[in-house]
Image (cartoon, rainbow, N blue to C red; front, side, top):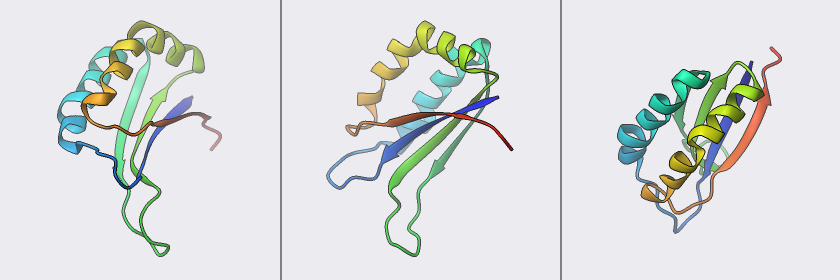
Length: 102
């Protein structure tokens, strides 16, 4: 099992349309990737903590059975999904693939 983390930096001067992200982008991600191994997705909003503002505005976690499943999904629909990013943000997301170990 792997989890793909997509982290959107909380940088001043950047935009992030949360409504578009939740109502259009994430349903599109689920529609395109569910048949290609996407098991679960969770979207979290960063909130201020003891140190001040959260470093990431939004973090999305996408669960797949394997790296191969994620690669297959990304190859099939990556251009469409990644091409949608400018519709909701002008910041560059950080993507990290994580092996679930516990």
